[in-house]
Length: 467
Image (cartoon, rainbow, N blue to C red; front, side):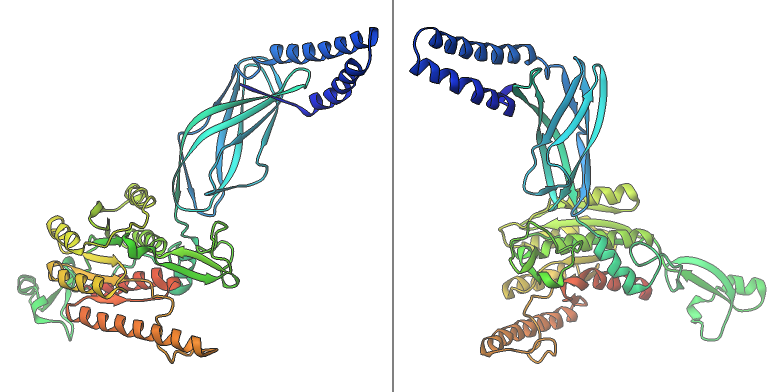
């Protein structure tokens, strides 16, 4: 416990100590003795007040949950329980030590009044996470006034509370809902489709246009008229999202602050982009992975997750259900961009060994570097014959055709900038054409359209029964 002089003690010191020391220095005899007595009385009063009050916080215990889960930009209430096993405390002040990754809503220092003896009091400390990741609350500080109010008694309470902050998907879900105009939080819902899948649906009479290979000859013989088998699209397909968190995933995405609204995934007070709101490509990859996980579950498919950089570091076998979604979310929320180049050969070998059943593999990687794209192209044949592969990345900021109507150059410098962006756009188109020869589709949407583009590709694959 650490005592700190209160404002009352400072006022008393100004009214007693200064006159007393003045008398001691400049007066003699009885006046000097009176000054010494006043000074001694002040010291005794302060010491006595501290000694009789030093135990006030010894019997106050604090409890916090060991695990708290929150979302970027949303309020996160932390439940704080105070238990007073000593005497009644009229006023107790408290505060939690947090990092710059949080914003405190309301009062930074909370107050609990009339904490009765032997009673428990629960309060809520409001935090707002500003970035995704894993954090720890390590200390809580409490403060009470001494009995005479001359001291503020501080105590540090060690904590072991883990805070898990997940990506915010509200804006992405709204974009999907407005895109598909369907009911549901992720913009899509399960629709039973009948087609040439592998799951038997029913028998019906032959209709003009039915394929002869679908005729059930035994049923035809029994009924003495042509009978056709119909099939339902298989609902337990495996979908894997592969996220690259190597150095290329740290590429910045910038949006003018005037165009980004509060509550959007780009808006954050911790952004140091000046007139721009700044985030990274990896943040969009992780949001897209969670959105696709939610859509795949509603479609009845199994969803898996893979992350890699210079090696495969997370591999979650495809399953479904709410518990599995939480497992995937806990696996990706701590991912950060690495400072290594991606090793596609190690990735392809790992996928080839672990995935024995044909699956849809959605890769979220950055191929804007020509050497990286060449390495990816050389290693892709290890899996593309067995699995259906889709590749997506965020379009680089300047990668647009030079005559794009959205980008009118204002000066000569802008012309050269757009010329460089045109060359980059042309290289990405050539990469897409090369991948298309291997049966792999390359998507290069803008950052705001990445999730919607990936979900559209997935639903198209389901509709066309390509897996």
